[in-house]
Length: 230
Image (cartoon, rainbow, N blue to C red; front, side, top):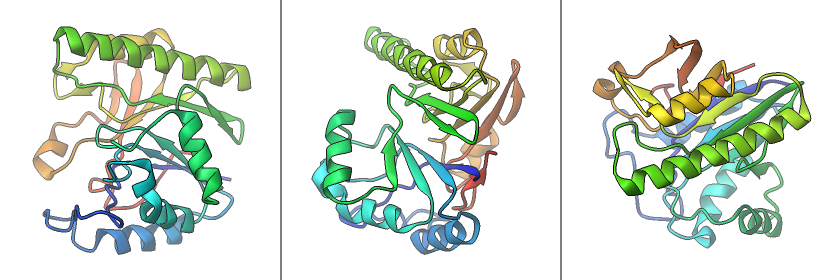
């Protein structure tokens, strides 16, 4: 069983928010479907690291979730900045169960074990914000990351693989608090999304940085293809 990852599906099958108008996104849903089905089997797991659906309410996610559910493998959903539909884990779990979306689970203050490796994660926050409100959000996100990490350590002694939606570093700018939390936890791998467009991708940090191996998995960067983690 393999672990894959991708972020920023930005699906709008049930709402009027087409991404095809953006450069490089033409026919992206079909491209994503083709690439996903070519790589992922029903025995695999895919972490979707945020910005999953443009729906504003959970009930409006049905078409997008139906599409995700139809794809092979188990899916772990992480919150992104555009997931306005996101509610408590309990409410999302109830919605998934009610609609028979049993291939989908939420990664939120918890962890999962895949073939002896554990995953932890949280949304994160902007790397260039320093206001009072931002610090409250950052501290909350650090708390959620630690909670997810602690849950992972209960499942396995191995170091968890961390997933964020926001990059903790971009170019030479860090979200210092979240970066320090990753270092304090001993994280060695971090996968993130959020960044779009060729110019933005040029400044994305990929590879080793301060002892952590960073990977950008925004779907326009991966050419709408899930990336093999393990």
